[in-house]
Image 1 (spheres, rainbow, N blue to C red):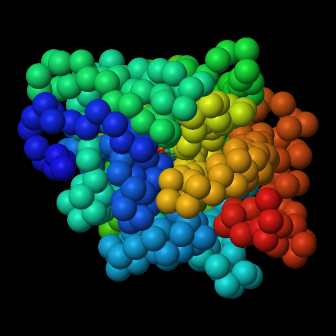
Image 2: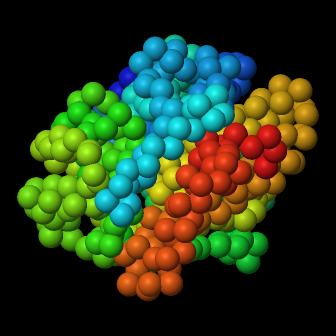
Image 3: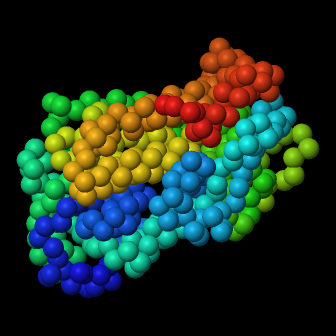
Length: 407
Ligand code: FAD
C-alpha cells in the first residue's frame, strides 16, 4: 500500500471501493471511518499537506460533533486541548448582555482551530490507519457516476501523469470551489442560493482574545464579532461592503472600527495585535439538492455552504461525514443500503435548520446598519427578547448549540 508520504504515484491503485475528493474535515473524517472498518479508499487533494494543516478557518465545534468524533477515535487531541465555551456576549446600544447558554442547557461549545483538527485527522488517516492520500493533484474529474463502476481521473503532482482510479463510490468533499458538484447533471439538480448583499472582513489577530467568550457587536456602523481561537490568536469580523478590498482596511482602521462596534459601558479595552489574515467574504449560502446522484455522494461545503454567521459550516460537514462514512461501511461490508438511501434526507434536515438559524441571526447582526429604521427596530426587538423571555432564550440556545432532539 502506498503511504501518504510516498513521493511516487506509479503504483497507485487502479480500483478502490471509495475515492474521496477533498481532504477537508468532511473528506478526512469519511476516510478515517472507512479505514477503521478496513475499507480501502483513496483521498485526492489539490493542496499540499502543509497547506491544509495551516489553513485557518473554523474554530467553534458543537458538542454532538465532538462526541461523534470521539466515538470514532478522532477526538483525543481535541478533548485534551480544546477550550469549552458556555456563554456569548451581545453588545448593542453601548451595553453588554452576557448570554449564559451553558447554565441554561448544561451544554457547551468546544473551541479548537480547524487546522489543528485537520492535522489530527490527516495524521490518523494516513500515518495511523494506513489510508492512501495524494496531495497536490490536478485536473480532477469524476466520470460514469450513473454506472456501478464510476471513476476519478487526476494528474499526479510528481510525474505529471494522468491516472484513472475506478471505484464503487465517490465521496465529493471538495468544498465550495471543488469540481464534484459540477458532475451532477444540471437538469436533476436544484441549487438554492441566498445572498446577504454584504461582506465580512475576516481577520486573524496575533493577540489573545479580548474577552473569554464569543462577542457579537450590533452597531449602526455594521456588525463586529470576536471568536476566540487560542491564547495566541483571535478571529475578528467586521461587516463591510461586498467585494471590498482588504487593502482598504489598514491596521489602524480595523482596530478603530472594532473598538467602536464592540464598545460598551464598562468593557475592558480590546487586546490589539498584528493582523495575520485579512480577507473579505461575500456573505452567501447555498444548498444543493439532491446531494446524491448515482454513485456520487456530496458532503460538507461541496453540497451546502452556510456563511460563518453562526459558526455552523464545519459542524454540518462533520454531520454529513458521520452519516456518509457509516453508510458506506454498512454498504461495503454488509451490503446494507439503507444508510445510503436515507443519506441526503437525513443531512438536509439539519442543513436547512441551520440555514434558517443563520438567516435569522444575520438579521439580528445586520439590521442596525441596514439604513432601514424598520429593520433596525425589529432586530433590536429580537435581541431584547433573548434577555426578557426565557422561552426565546431557550429556543436560541438550542439552535446556537445544535441540540434539538430531532431535525
Ligand atoms: P473544505 O474544508 O473546504 O475542504 C475541501 C477540500 O477539498 C480542501 O482541502 C480543498 O483544497 C480540496 N479541494 C478543492 N477542490 C478540489 C479538487 N478539485 N480536487 C481535490 N481536492 C479539492 N464552520 C464552523 O462550523 N465553525 C466555525 O467557527 C467556522 N468559522 C469559519 C470562519 C471562516 C472565515 C470561514 C471561511 C469558514 C468558517 N466555517 C466555520 C466553515 C468551515 O470552515 C467549512 O464549513 C468547512 O471547512 C467545510 O469542510 P469541508 O470538508 O466540507 O470543505
